[in-house]
Amino acid sequence: MNKKRILIACEFSGVVRDAFTRAGWDAWSCDLLPSEKPGNHYLGDVRHIINEGWDMMIAHPPCTYLCNSGVSWLSKKPGRWEKLIDAANFFRGISSASIPRICVENPIMHGHAKKLIGIEQPQTIQPWMFGHTESKATCLWLKNLPPLIPTKIVKTEMMKLPVSQRQRLHYLPPGPQRAKIRSMTYPGIAEAMAAQWGVL
Image (tube, rainbow, N blue to C red; front, side, top):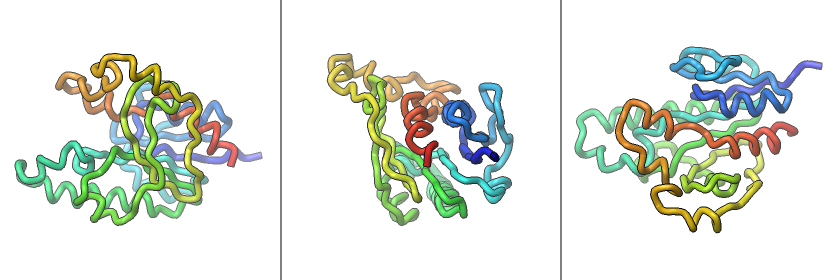
């Protein structure tokens, strides 16, 4: 019996890929960066392999120009509007791929990005819904997938922690690794995706 095939687009960490591999899928990650863990990985533009007969895709397109936290730079840095349009086109292309089941995740978007993308996310999740004592709102755009069901809500425990701990990613110091760390999927969320969507 052939394994179902899943593409984890724009992932270098291998976190989601490995969760689906453990769930019995033929899972591949794809990114412009090499994989940080051994495993099936395509090094390059996801658009080169997106039409190769995948059963599911979970995509993490770059959010630099789409997310709410970067909206103030649109009027301050030359070229940001053009990059926003490129990012929105990439997002739309990924989300409209001819793959039966798709999840596209991104942080909360600013209004300009929402208007360009033109589709509302059906779900917003937090790490504290999946066993992590941290806060980081993540939006999920879903095609033929049900909303994720929280697996371990630890909001009460999280709220007892200092703000610097429960919003750890926000307080990361500037540096070359900051964007990479902030973009990684929490393992609890990856495991929930594999457990709940991997059986569909």
